[in-house]
Length: 268
Image: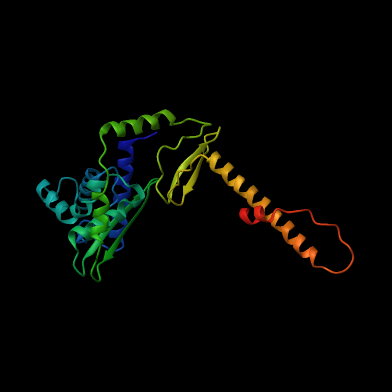
């Protein structure tokens, strides 16, 4: 069951509770005591905007701060942290830390800056803390932004097809999915769903290698070569035995079978 408005209310109540606790411990109000703010993303950047407005209302009272002032505060305190999120979308666990990277990348907080962070997780677990910039904050912009720029643009029809496949298997028990394409290295994919709905996943450590059907003709040719080599070796042993037997002294030994020397040498 997904309750969007209810989830937002839980998020806002956790935010307000953290604000009260931090203020009670002498940390000041969340929206006033920091130079920059980082929020858990929720559904998207617009959600963070609502969260910030809720934090301002909790700190100063509902309607006590004008819309223009709230807008200016948001652009100065929060907006730099949402640049990457506007290109990525919901990220769940990684959201707070990607937003922090976005802040460091787009605002370059000077030494001495205080960054207020609010982290939130499903189950109404939330944390509020402050970071102090004590040196140069660096982010590998080329690598981070480069990965976003390198993404493949797909038409809406491909996305609809993925959603249709998901809908066709959602809540389905006792089935094994078919793998389409090649899974990326170091990733997990679903392997099977049991009769009780228990899902089993498998880890893909490296890029998969497409296996080919065995080449029967090549295998038969290789077997023929092995058999020919074995026959030649046997004939060579017979030749050596016959030569050695001709020059030995002592009790009589059975005569070695005749061997075509030219044939043996030619085969070897």
